[in-house]
Amino acid sequence: MNSKVESPIDPIAKDDLQQLVELTHFIASARDAMSDEMVARIARAMSEGLNLLDRLTRNEGLMHLLHMINREEGQRLLIALAEVLRALSKDIAEAAPAAGGIGGVLRVVREPGTQEGLQLLSLVGKHLSHSLREQSRSNG
Image (cartoon, rainbow, N blue to C red):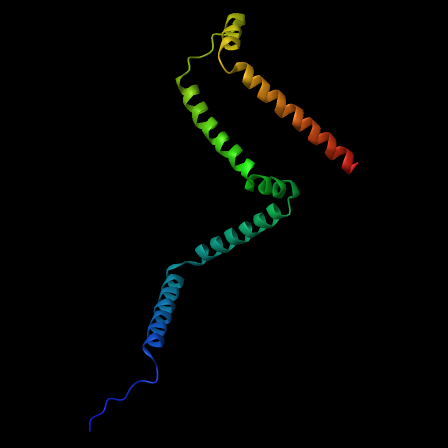
């Protein structure tokens, strides 16, 4: 009787063991390929990255901004800003240099959107001033 003796290791465990061996070989090859200088640079970069991450997460203003950006109205604002930057870049590249003088200013004032742009800047200033005053009162 020539019965086949089955291995105590099931096929899934064999595959796992093979993957572990391959991972070990990969790590050993990577270690052999890196010089001491490369290891030092990677360690320094990781250390600086963790330091930066720590500083960013301790920044109350940045965390508040990130929470606001995560909201629906923050997403709409970011999309609008991205579209503005794209259009602005195109418009600036295609625009002729400003001629200057009162005539140039009057031409800009007559262009569609100039008053809306000034209104937008006025609203940004109004809300920013209000927020800064409120912060001063609450901290002060």
